[in-house]
Image (cartoon, rainbow, N blue to C red; front, side, top):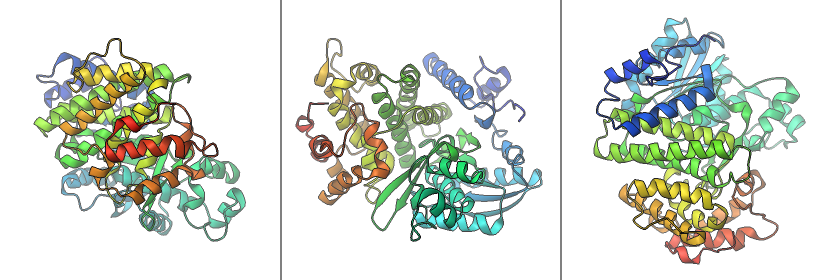
Length: 476
């Protein structure tokens, strides 16, 4: 695949021509030097990571890359798009025009509803099979892209293959159920010598970074529970994100997405102690969280601040990099049981401070890093020097809570509208083997058989429900 100037992105020190384009668009105009420097750092990290497979920036040329990318896979595309969202409409037209200019036949269907319900996965998979498309092009946020990933799996493998290779029973073989967990799609690819239908993911929201990652979150609306597919085999083959799409996105979506990005980085960073990727995650997490906090502060003042939108896009993209290196843990796990009461980012933002206190003793270096960022941003007033143990964890957690308050977000599960039944659902989900990777990703891994869920997780979510940080167990 040829290297494209937009693929190299925009910072002047990396690509002068692209950098000038952003300056002309007003991105760097009047920007403080530290913000400009961190934007440049983030762009370089993303380019070094994704190479030619990812085009991002703010010029019109970014979305024009669609047809060129898609041309690597064939000439028939299924476009899964946010057809009802006015703020996405003109960008969708640009994508479709790019496909037309490259001689593509395409069918355009509606995207998935929030949290990617199973029913939308099955609908998209049916269209993939009917159209015999060479590539699927989801244009939307995390739910749309996650549903497209799962649909590609279903359209690529038969029920009989699921029975033979994964041991699925006849009742679930034609559903997405056998693929939940870690590595099942890769197992199918290895056994059948077939890859899933290629995915060209076009992101429209600074949030989950689904366009860059190996995760697909799918919801069963009947029981109100989200489950997860984790597999390198479902990483989109190519991805595009024009950050200017987000300039007109709803405020709530912007805030939820930013907090989701912070959760990605912080949960991976918490669990990275002793891992080979620790220093890389530290760099990514510090930069991502800094960019997202500053970006949200600026967007609150001016939703049309292009520089802030770029910072949020880069920051949440780095969150995607973080979850490709390590994994999220307790807060993400808990959010999967709250799909009927709140958004994913909001649930994670409520739970993260409480898990931060639970794991404080095991994440002292991480707490110093995160504490400095929240203090610099104005959300921690006390001195951090000399603080350690649970005391340091409490300071960092309260800084996170103050940030959520400044955004107008709830800070307890009770304020979110959860019930005691939701707390029980969270504990039950934690014992599901298909979600056990979240327990293993914790700074101090929990073991279901040893009673850790009841002993450690239960008081933590009770604290998150009431807001009482003092009832969190100190053992981790």
